[in-house]
Length: 257
Image (cartoon, rainbow, N blue to C red; front, side):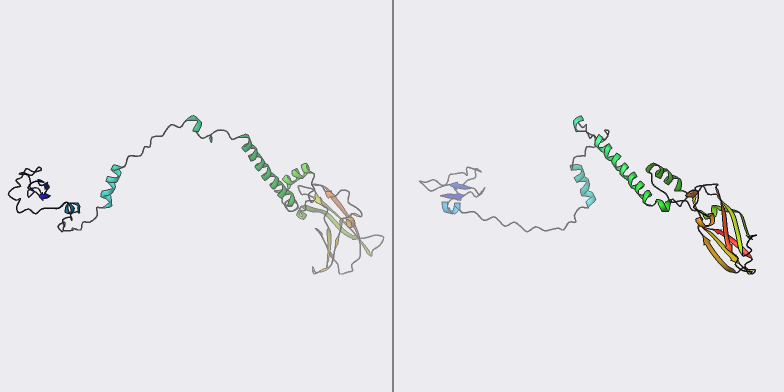
């Protein structure tokens, strides 16, 4: 059997023969005989059952505002170890080789890319050479390219650079019903020009056009031209025989087309 010590509350075993507890508590040395008759006995089964926890006294809950973030952050920053910004030495075998010279294959790729770009530009020039050849800025470059590649450029056309040097219209002495037309023009352009067409316009005394006609190079030269084009600075002579248009035609105009 066991009894409770009234001083410390500990369990104290009683004597098996007499059923009495010892004179003093083995834990706190408090006297046990005076309280022995009034202390209830405790069975072993009751000791094995868990004792209920004493109810905790109610505590007042005081609402406290959370600490400001600025106050918590320094603590967290102070507790965390500082970052090491010191550059570390990298072994030579692990260093990047980006600063080294590019490999031979990469250089060949660049050469191939540049070559393809130039080939595309050249192809575009050749495809548009007829249009670009009519522009003075592109003509010299295209002539150099076509001279190397043996391509053909259309002849230069600049009618304003064809200068009429002389012209004359008169009746033929042996046949007054026919007119003898003569003229001379020169190519003042920078490049050889295609042979122009010649337009002859007849007007009356009031300036009204009463007739006109366009003559080809074979007609006003009297045969095939001596060269496919008219070279820069070269001159050409026009010879035409026309029917008398009548007494109303008093003015003749020449236009090189």
